[in-house]
Length: 419
Image (cartoon, rainbow, N blue to C red; front, side, top):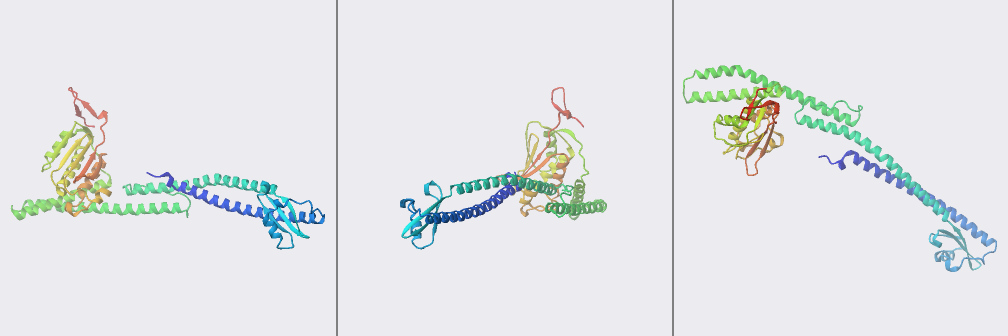
């Protein structure tokens, strides 16, 4: 499940908020320092002017009490004959610019109150903060919207790539955005990859079908020829190998038809217990059958029999006894007690000509591939897994049967109807 907090739009919004905050803070600090420096300069000039006026008007007796004069100002005035200034932000709870000078051994001071300048500076800081907040409030949604627009295009590309990986080779993103846009380039690259992959797979499917068709005629002659050979151990060995080769050819033809998606199902209502019992009876080895209830499904009997047969044969060939087949509602479960399915089949599903693990024996990998293809034709789900206590598990989940496809006899039992 996608975490919305990790989405591109959220990240871009956070990045925009941080960037605007840092930029606004830097600009606001620069304006604050510049304004304050200008105010202090003006305050010093004014305080010196007031001090010169006090000295020139001989009003040195009307002085501020010595106890209120900052000690630092008095000490600094002793070191020079020129006027000195001192900014005191704590005097009378209001900032004051002092100017002082010793005249005839007497410390003369003047004050310039800077409360109005302080209020102006505070107002400037508030307005800068309001402007920064307004900028963030405007730019962050715009950044999130722009990122979400790009994110939607990227998610579309990701969904299409997942569809292609799942087997939908006709899925395409299509032209989006302007040429030169990065997302547009990604979309074109994914579509180009899908086109190349589709061409290669179709070429492989055509090759498989052509080889199987070409082998069919000589194999038919070979089967007929083996029937004319005299009975014996060598003849039986030849006949067995010919049967294997013929089965492989038929499997290849079936795989090619499934790949071409030309197979269609003939649905009828099927009582599962009787149907599965017949399949188990003709399988040729012991299978433990368990049934819960009396489920009836609407399916293609021939294809369902093909699926179950392949799963049971795979369990017998690559697993170990006992082999179990359970019916629970619309779910059929085939289990063996062997080493289990290899990791690649569990992760990616079955693939032709790949058995996955040496301990499961040798094979062509066509049985599970055909079972998966036939399950798709009848609309069933086929899942592969391993049991906790060992063994491979294959589950066939059949779709429910519509009420319109069922009928009941006089006793109230369900009877299958051809559709």
